[in-house]
Length: 543
Image (tube, rainbow, N blue to C red; front, side, top):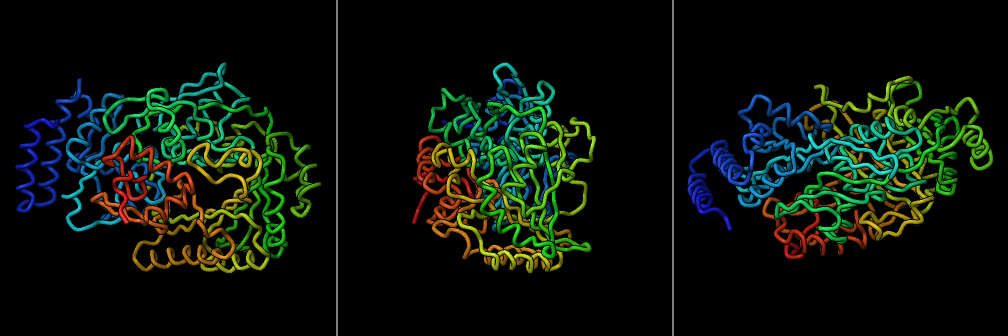
């Protein structure tokens, strides 16, 4: 039951909202939150040191520090009334309890790579939204501890750690252990694991989420739960069901994987004049059937250069170069790889190289993050899954798009291997057997303004539309970690949900969506943890 003093305070506050500014209204809410935290915290002084409001000189830097997409870092982007960076589990519990009591929306952030900014803002500013639906950002940046156990081949990693920190801490302890997560070292573990987690060892070891064996989570009631106490349904849901929807996952226990002391990488460029179209066409059929240890992805890229359009074949092989060369000569001679194209190194060196660090970079560089340095970087991403090879004519049309303004990027990531062996229902991530590869569409630009925005958003949507005949339609599948609000959103901020929830829900999760809704209905029926693409409880779905 709510504290009567809090109820009285809020009642008086709401009566005043119509005659006060949004700033004054939010000041009431901020004061109510502080009063609640005093009641619910053993050490409220400590948590107050981790609260940043707009009147704090550090508010802007704390809010913007991890933001990678300038689309959600402008003056008119809806801002939280507070950013809280807790350091201990009890602080998180107190924040959740008080936010629930005061009906304050919580956005959970772990790294800032969110493609649609849902972890730190709302996509659209609605009339008097700041009064009706104030939100705060719970930033897990301080939950970044990584503890590696080389004997059991496990690690506990905080949601606020980056995948780079996890990789480095593993490499400190072992040369023959690794983890199959993403390429970009600055991705926050929390969001990455919550959606599945792709990486260069996908075909050998599957997703990051396939290797999660335990977790610690704060639920909507403020309880700290582990795998045993949360139960297998909730534990299933958090491993790929999307972030900010079932609770605050504070840390994850992961099973590490064996890696050889020597791995091999290559990056081979081919242009349309060098038969790139036919090589890509052949790649579609052979890449998913190659040995599991070999992952060859393609960057189809447009840029301002002497050769503005090119295909880059980028690869990691878990083994020596001589063995890889034999595989390529036998299975993929069209690529024309030579021994000089292949580079042997350790697994941790491959992590740095594939993430485009200069040769010889100390692995400690993985402990850093990509900080917003003031240079604008607007971008939009979308995704598709391909089950049948796209004909040569269809591939040739992509070059025309890439020649427009010499910009744009498509990334083709192969499937097969271990991904064919894991059931679609093992975790919420359903995109397994039957897929040849995944496409990620990316468009980035640096110019501000409506004209640049509309032009670049139009480009990526036209490319996406162009691919419609070549990809599945029922549903047209998408990857939840490449958030795309074009495929549908929940109705915010009043938390009512229409049939449109099924649009994006089925695209991301296919038949697993119904089970996710069932879990959400059981563990968070009031829909406390929510955003524009969070799993809705059954009671909030309306037709």
